[in-house]
Length: 299
Ligand SMILES: Nc1ncnc2c1ncn2[C@@H]1O[C@H](COP(=O)(O)OP(=O)(O)OP(=O)(O)O)[C@@H](O)[C@H]1O
Ligand SMILES: O=P(O)(O)OC[C@H]1O[C@H](OP(=O)(O)OP(=O)(O)O)[C@H](O)[C@@H]1O
Ligand SMILES: [Mg+2]
Image (cartoon, rainbow, N blue to C red):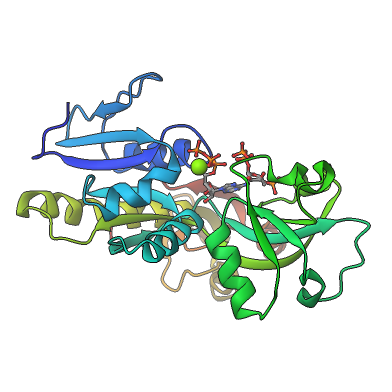
């Protein structure tokens, strides 16, 4: 059972967003015991319950106010929003954060032998998809007279199975399209995972908890992009060395006990240090160059 005083968060039970969503919750200090068959997971150190559901259900659970927060792909969120709009159902929510995982695009792809030149070539054709509302919106906006055929999965086999002439599905590396003899032609929507909150106000203590968790999410995402860089540099080339360190205007410069002409530089860099830059630093006489991951950050 869930307790209404506890913050309810919906996450995908198993799929592309599950591991990253759980990893993010753990990284922001929420202790969880996820057991495969358990569809509700209670946090052991925060008043939080996780509802583990199919991703299709997450937008509705948030928009109906059954859960407080949800982790969901923008593609699924937008599709469900359009579907609910068409059905006259409530479709309000707030996006709290755009996250750094679940990156993919919704694209139209055609069989590799199809001589595709422009979207006009889709006129009169059937396009199989799991996202009929997003696809119909694209057809409307692009003035294309084509038919969206709804399939809940294995969309890529539709042309070969004779169900449709083309498909509209999610693409990340393009490997699935290639394996099925298809080529990507039009990107109709770009998506990432987002954290959403229900539209009606939360109880004060729940909102206070959300407000504490959001800066932690920012800190985790920022930390993933940042590196802690340490190196020894010749004093004489300090300015040149600083210029080579990305996004690091004010590095910490420390004297080295045994060496008058050399200093230690410590810096948190907003970017990774490329091998090419490390080679340039070495050429300037730098040594002991270390690039380390950062686990957490706070301003
Ligand atoms: N190849 C991919 N790379 C990155 N993100 C993806 C990829 N495919 C899908 N996603 C994102 O992850 C979400 C979930 O994808 P997944 O394939 O796990 O969903 P599903 O099969 O509908 O799962 P469910 O059983 O929960 O309904 C997608 O809606 C999209 O936002
Ligand atoms: O461009 P790619 O990197 O090949 O990724 C695209 C595939 O990933 C997703 O499916 P997933 O593998 O999650 O399986 P599913 O279709 O069973 O949900 C999506 O539906 C595509 O089929
Ligand atoms: Mg789904």
